Amino acid sequence: MIAKAHDAGALPVLVGGTGMYMKVLIEGIAPIPEIDPEIREVVRSLETASAYAALMIEDPERASQLEPGDSQRIARALEVKRSTGVTLGDWQLAKTGGIGDDVDLTAAVLLPERQWLYDRCAVRFEAMLKSGAIAEIEALLERDLLPDLPVMRAIGVPEIAAFLADQIEREDLIARGAQATRNYAKRQFTWFRNQSPDEWHRVESQNIDIETIFASLLHD
Image (cartoon, rainbow, N blue to C red; front, side):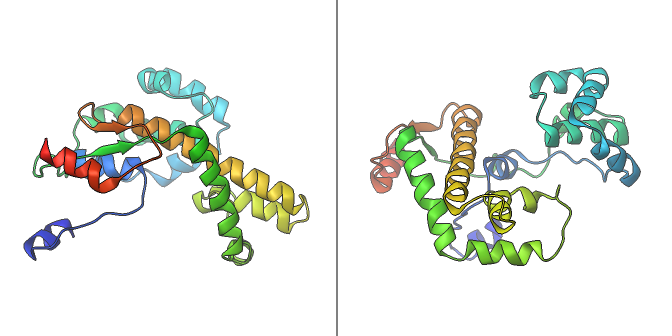
């Protein structure tokens, strides 16, 4: 789609997603084959502590890079090693498809003051509730999906589900939802600070003038 926009003389604008999506777009993605369904089922059925212990034996380098409670990344690394016989790290050395070498990229990482950011997180979650999030989650729960699916762990889903089940009051819902949003924002903040290339400008202020920042970057 980016190439198509360029061919049409248009400027593509990418919105949303996570830092990992951006990293894959720029650097490419490891050509990992499909995971054997039986292996995936076995790995995903393991308790996190057991999966981490197995990973320390089968791929100690990857295990050392992960937190012992990071169930999703631990399971992914373990299933890749067992299904392909190659570690995730080795697969990532063979990345393909990135556009980083084909484009001139000018970037700024926005790192506003934490409390200012957290205040916005609280406002955002309340805005979600006012915009129909409760009805949306109610409809989602009616689909009776597996509880370990990513959508069931999305910000607001566990909190609103608990509220709909009369397990918590609305005040607790708002507090927990705002905290979940802050936790995610903190992870994003840390990821972009540490994972972005060193040459990307860091802007550590909430008083952000986008036009001025990028005019300065492009001038450089």
